Image 1 (cartoon, rainbow, N blue to C red):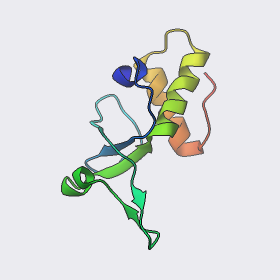
Image 2 (image 1 turned 90 degrees about the vertical axis):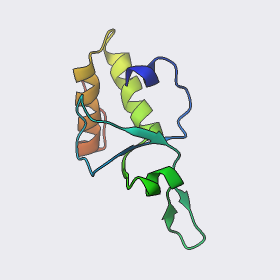
Image 3 (image 1 turned 180 degrees about the vertical axis):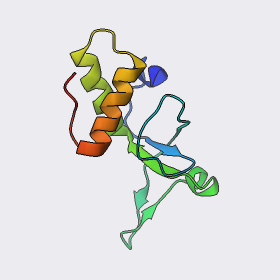
Amino acid sequence: ISKIMSGYKKDNFCLYTKEYESSARADLICYLEMYPVISDDDDEVYPEFVINNSLELFFYGDQFLDVLRNISTQKENPSMEDFIAGLNFYLENDNFIDL
């Protein structure tokens, strides 16, 4: 989170995990890779790295960054726990948390 917040501006990535995850946590290992593309048959085609490593989609990059920005505007020096709470709230409610 801190690496992304420190200057990553593009939102053309997704976060992937080794297994399906329903919530964020501090020790969760995520992989950044491109969005899946939609084929002519309306199927999602995931990047080769995602397929080769059997990764699961965890968060779309634009939503992830929106959550981080929302937390940062509400609190001057947000903690990792603040970010994780915001991410989990978004995953459960499709909405932003009020701190």
